[in-house]
Image 1 (spheres, one colour):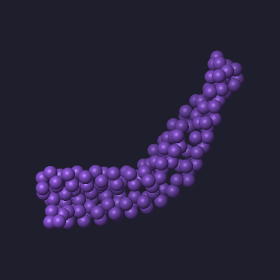
Image 2: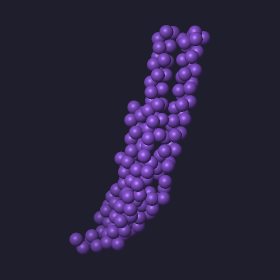
Image 3: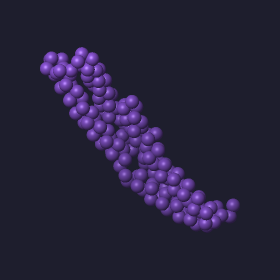
Image 4: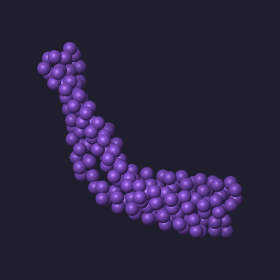
Length: 160
């Protein structure tokens, strides 16, 4: 489950959600505002906010922040794995007062966590940050173009 979430966070699909969700939100607010006031210049003003969102997307270094967050998750997972491994060593050496069922559960949890840790490490290592960077750059350009068109011609929708 954790690996599926992390894989999604490291994918361009997550980057698309991060970049386009505020744009769609601004467009919805702009259309609502224009319809409520019957003044399409309000919709046009949302174009300037969309251009600002594109600049934030372009200069935000999101791909580096995503990779840094995944590396922090890897460190945390490593600490949890270390504590489970220490408990597993204590259990297997007979020092622990846990029952046989509890010992088996700790061994299963430790091996599952170890597999997840290896998968997470491989995901972070093989993550193509250049691909995500290009994705953010092209999306920022598309958002800037859309925002500029809305900013310049959004009030003309009133004539339609």
